[in-house]
Image 1: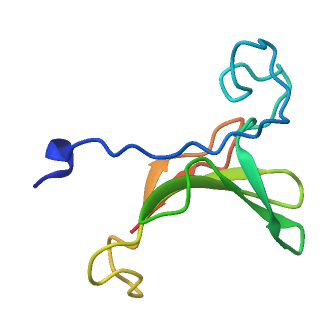
Image 2: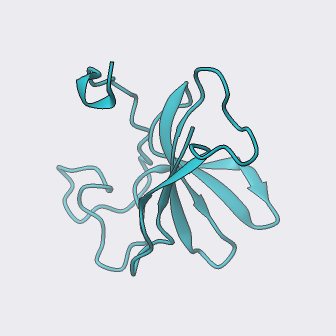
Amino acid sequence: MSEEQMPPVAREVLVDEDAVTVDPALPAFLAPPEDAPAYHGFRVVAESEVDGWRLGMITGFGVEGDGYVIAPDDGRAGLVWTAEGAGYFRAGHPQFCDEVCGPDEYTWGCSRWA
């Protein structure tokens, strides 16, 4: 089955309930303040901090998911992953990591890890 034929998968969205929203009727990721960083309103995993680097989660942990990394300078990059099937994480494998979107004024870009 090709990726286009795959049915959508429902995933839990990990909302940061304490994040500031400009519209109380909407979660912060849908109504962020003007100066909010990329991925504002999604949960940061406090226990993940190593040398100032942190992991943020958009969806729950699972076989597939979406998240982001926060650098010590607050720079951010998106992550999309799947951890299912054979042959993943082989050095030099052409499908090890694909760019989903390149850098812009808000992030370093987003990569998909398979």
